[in-house]
Image (tube, rainbow, N blue to C red; front, side):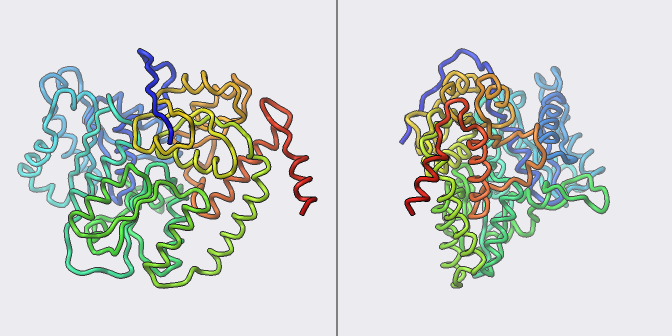
Length: 448
């Protein structure tokens, strides 16, 4: 159990966290035919759009209510109404996800009430679902906004339904899972004959495919009709503590039991997921999945010589920090420095003496004697200054290609993660803070 400490600095020196509205907007992009909208100034939306485009390298649908200094003071109802009508007329979305920010939240606008009034005044919006996520950017972070948006979608669309579909399961995906991670989760569930409803499903909308024709909204993602029938599933899997609240809401409304997984990277967590799928389906584990497990075990044997005794510094959103740090601890490394973007119950579970809720400056101050730094792309300069190997993880990843196709869950993803990080250690043998593990590896193998 880690001790959680606040940084205590009077200001943020080098920001680590991304904002709540950005996380909520990204979650809304996991819905089919969706148009996320920031109830904010144009500059706020433009900044979020730049980060999303640089990370996914895709055309990203994102709109704004274009608040200014006058509407911020007098109220933004007119801007919200006009923005919703314009988007509905031009893009014909199935759902508009409205994310508030500090401007509108600090003023105390009743955005939920405004949307109900707009829907009553404009019957032409009957075919468009309007969902509001309250995401002030003066508190919380990316995963908090994501969790709020997922809960808002469940609250708006999931209703109790009679009966159960014995083959249908719900999967609530956390913000730390990439589209490739979601494909691995889907393929594994389908291998047991189960039909997963993944919410949000970025694997459908932001997986890097080329569309046959231009569509102004998201192309792919979770269909609204599938969300509406989540109450008939036999189980809900919550992957990440920040989406467990949405899973509990489904349970409260429909009685669908919840199975929460704080992480999916590593042997034991994926074993638990596979065992749950086997139990629900009544089927044995397929040979292909058993083979991948065997490959992971072999990779762990090959790689643990290079991980053992290494000191790691990590800065990330809480659930990602928890998953990566526990994986590294499983491999024999020590998490010497852990910095979280925001507060979360996940922080107490991090295998480190303490977790600092702070910024990248806190990371740089505490990582000088470490063997590896793990963070998003904004941490690269710190690693360069300190002369320490750097592994990119989280959002945003703007200085490398293929962020959406990186996989770190399951047997296959964990195996590849071992090789990728292990190769960083191998390439740095004899360098900063490293220990010569190669001789130990050969000696151990010779003993066998």
